[in-house]
Length: 114
Length: 110
Image (cartoon, rainbow over all chains, first blue to last red):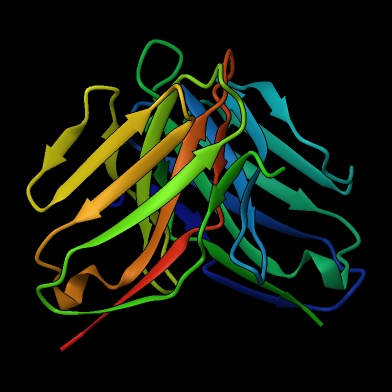
């Protein structure tokens, strides 16, 4: 049973389109995250949610909108996709606050914007 | 200055070698420290947490020097399966934000 699962695994789309990536965790964690890993392999946090509440919102264009319908799900919607959005997007979860911030990652979604 | 700095490598070592990676971090108030491992085209996975007293997990030893803001990872008796990118990770103070280094690539050859 996959602990953190995200779909789709691959996403190829044209500039200007809108797309969503879904993430679900079955670890019972309270906090979920979205990260972006660019072509230089640098992994940077975008957002975190604790029990459906936005906690971390890094300097990310407002074309990116996270949505957390419940604490086990954190989806990422991207409007008006640009070439620079091409990257691997990872979802993660951890049991914080109240535990060590060990984060478990999904397998990633490879987004290619053409 | 980057918040977490690592030598990107690659480190090319033969099987059985001992290899050490270093990492420095800029915020002296950082609270928790980790090494993650990322295989090619895969997600990062926790390798081990790092404690001030130093800790060991089989062939892996991690050390933290808070005074110098320096973290290290030592791998003994390298295996082919150790080939991966090793990410130094720091938990910022008063936040659940993890800050990742750019990673050090290790290639173990037969």
